Length: 250
Ligand code: PEP
Ligand code: MN
Image (cartoon, rainbow, N blue to C red; front, side):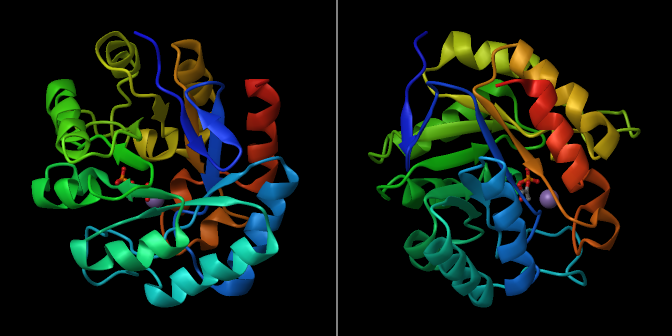
């Protein structure tokens, strides 16, 4: 099936491979601005800007919330970038809409049908991550919840599924990329950070994703992964990110 092209700033997702990158979460203004500066310098134009974090434990860092959204605003005034930011709940839609170019629905919310319908009424592209226990069919039906409300600018993101294998955080299902391209017009990108949970696996799995036809990747990058507030174990440092870009040869 022909892949639908989705325009985000000057990038056409679905037309040529895209690399979306950024920290797992926004940690502070100075931190985020310097991360954006590095990524912008590497040619990245779509940045992860996450202010609301879905965390397994309620006792861990939950994101900077509105303060994080203001940081996105500042970064966008300084750099010609687009941002993808997660909408964790209905009550955040308007606030995130104001600063974000792509509205992200995270894995945990893929089955939140009322949120999907509300996102379907927005006129901005949506990044729909695969539920960690969702079949390909359920994932595609989640996309239909969005499109049936009018918003057809959907980018799918394979981020790994839960299996019996604990070595990796999730099992990255690259066959889903092939299936989606056979069954659906939406572009599909791959997140090898959440898909493996292991920094050392990101480059090989990103290359594998491109080899099976993914329309791009989304990776977590942090200047000092060991000190990251969230997901440092699966974040590339700057040198590794540079190597990734070199090895992908996009
Ligand atoms: C994320 O990309 O920020 C995230 C939380 O990922 P997921 O929803 O896939 O767990
Ligand atoms: Mn993360």
